[in-house]
Amino acid sequence: MSGRVTLAVVLCLLAVPRTAPAQVSVSERDALTRQAEAAGAKGLPVGPLMNKIREGVAKKHDAKRIELVLTQMVTNMETADAIVREVEPGAAGPARDNAITLLSDALFSGLTAEEIRELQRQVQTRAAQDLAGAAKGLAYVKEAMLPVNEGTGVMVEAVRHKFRAYEMLDLGREIKRRETDYRTGRASLRALRDAIARGTRPDVLLRDSRSVTVERPAAARPTTDRPERTVPVDRPPRTDRPPDRPTDRPAR
Image 1: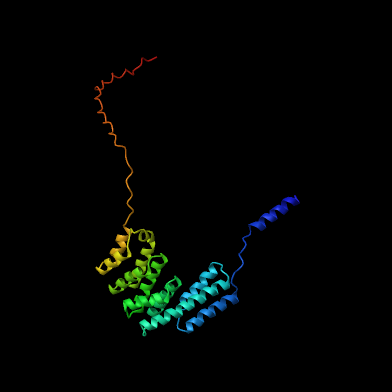
Image 2: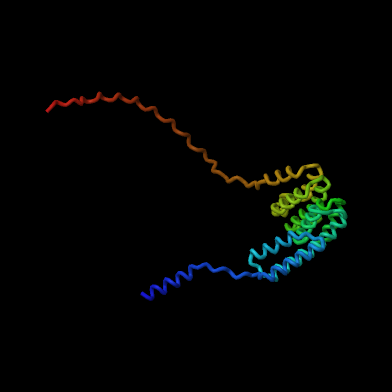
């Protein structure tokens, strides 16, 4: 009897859910928050940094790993802030924060400050958000390991033809989605640039791009003729049913 009781106790203990140990203590989280607030004191957007802290905590990353990511983000934001000041000195408020965030994301994705400045040299825009959208779109091109100079040409035409920032983002994402087509020659960045230069709008470009399907050769079918269907032979008319048998039975 005592053995059964012991087994029942063990099973109950095993059934109790165990909480995973927290990777970030309260003091460590406070230190990360202070790091983000220090960046905000320099005029950098705080929202993306706080979101990254929450994301790291939710994913159970240790505090050191989150701190390294925050440090890199702040460095990228400082570079992005300098570029925004060069392009649009009077930028302020949400528009400025959005431009810094997009440029920072482009830098985080592997685009260099020199490539962004070369993009600006060709575009000559005075709107930081336009440059930021083009830079993030170009970052997608670079992630797809396609020629950056050709991708720059695409984004330059997009800015010149008044594409909005989100439209250039969508264009960059679509190029990355079809990276295999661009690498194998089924699609061309130069052809895309020329289409934009002719005035093709982004909704048409994206619609046409997503409607492209790979043409595969049809499977060879046997060439033998099928036998003709036989015409059903007319059946003879059905004879009338015999009259029903009398159902009246003699009384017993």
